[in-house]
Length: 378
Ligand SMILES: Nc1ncnc2c1ncn2[C@@H]1O[C@H](COP(=O)(O)OP(=O)(O)O)[C@@H](O)[C@H]1O
Ligand SMILES: N[C@@H](CCC(=O)OP(=O)(O)O)C(=O)O
Image 1 (cartoon, rainbow, N blue to C red):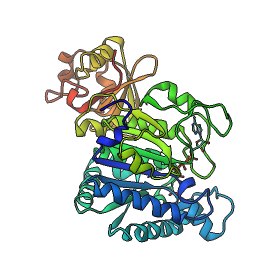
Image 2 (image 1 turned 90 degrees about the vertical axis):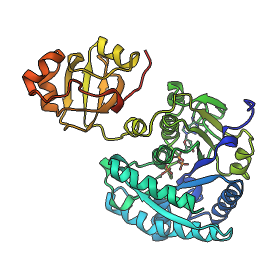
Image 3 (image 1 turned 180 degrees about the horizontal axis):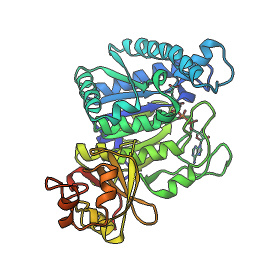
């Protein structure tokens, strides 16, 4: 494939995400013309044998329009009420638009908990695979009505990336109200330049995307750049492009380069490792000495208690815990074999002493390499 060809051309399974500002026409109620156009484009992708999951925001913005609220409420229960009202409009609009092409849609509302718990994660995955095999287009949003501030994704960019990981999609296409990622916020810097190709996860992208969003969406560009990094964990490329660009999805699928392409270069990991890498709820941290950091990042070894010099948090056996170096940078994460209390008892200890401290049936490793992901190359 020439470097002038969009990575979407080769993508069989695609997650497309549309943001609130697009779906609701800058907060003025659902843009039915735009919804109709996306449905027509996704129908065309189906004709080519591609599978598409649509992650759509807009429930809160549409709920506000339906309730006649001019200002976004602060109180969580009012946001949740708006989402419940608006989600009705959202799924109705998609159902009608896709039905014109003979395509069925399905509503999937997910929470953080659904993706953090391995069993529920696997259930969600099976359902999505089943829907795709039936030729249905799943329409995904966060289950805003039941989540609270501490546990919500908040923006749908993160959710789009997690769905990309969940179904092992080849590409994540984030459609927004700008032509892509610019070197600075184009609302404030008319001279900002479009970034056409970059590596997902490049820290320079995060500083370009620092500003807030449109005021209608929640994430801004930063969450899109972070989503690209997350999507790259499962080998998926991300495109950030304007949802107002005519036939954008079809043109991307036909190989045209539009917007910003944030490419995945990381090695593809196992399904279990991807789940660990993208785990949002870390229960604690263990600080490693330099030798342990080296063993993990360059040798891809299991983590032994002797390399741990500090323990933070109150975790249980089986929780996902971050491994940080002495500068506080995360270098890996994994499922821990001991509770925080036991980890504190055995940290800095040689392997031979572990049975003495915790009993003869103890594991030698604090984290087994098969249950770990290594986030930084040395
Ligand atoms: N470097 C950047 N490039 C492009 N847009 C940026 C950048 N930094 C901040 N933004 C802002 O991010 C907004 C898009 O985010 P958001 O409003 O959350 O959209 P959506 O609802 O599509 O998720 C843009 O309108 C723009 O003002
Ligand atoms: N779940 C919320 C989406 C939150 C949101 O604003 O997302 P985004 O437009 O992607 O920044 C809704 O449907 O209103």
